[in-house]
Image 1 (spheres, rainbow, N blue to C red):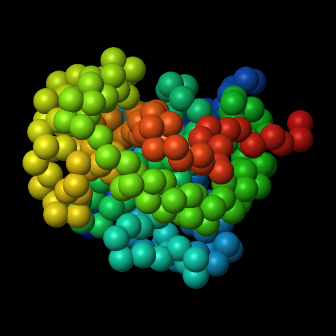
Image 2: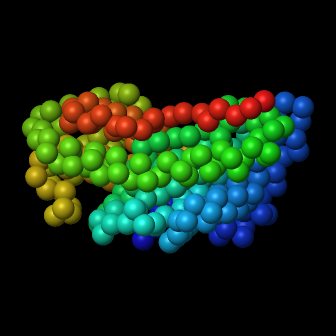
Image 3: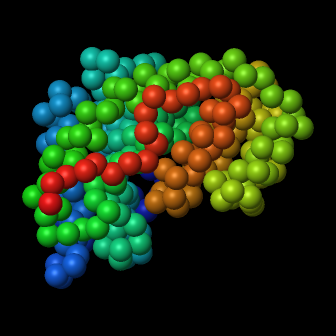
Length: 252
């Protein structure tokens, strides 16, 4: 099963992507270095990487990595936990760790948290990288449990065809969903391709939406799925116990 959809590269190829020279105000993190440090932190946390994939864009300036994880409290037949990495050499966004789930039946990938490694890439970022990564990885079990509760609440919340159509349009207007795919998502809700998603519930619609986020800009996927979840959470009455977006505080 694939984590990422396009622009994939082998992990060894990340070392061939040049890292810009540091300046007085900006210290870039090499894509390969970030991936290697993440593997080490995951292993120290007692978690197993069952699959990993990497993708680059803009000639290597932007990177997205995905690590499927398994642990004593993280295992399931219908979904798997994915730890995502984002990094940019063009300063378009801060390096961050994203935590999410991927459904087995359809490969839909969604993220419920985005932890920024730093607001700015200062000279101390490499010194503190392991500490920040460890803090982010320590959250994965609580994310796994919370996503299970979220799914249960979505499955219990029915929604009419009319309300579902309006909601998809609203998501597009919020920038959480591509306008060109609105009709496809509505049709996916009305005629789900997977038996597991039938029933006319928020869970049906959620998977109709995430089905048509596949293959898009990976750097935008965390924010799009977190925005979608916040809207669906309000409708389902689900109150997440985790922080969607945060920055881990470190000493100067």
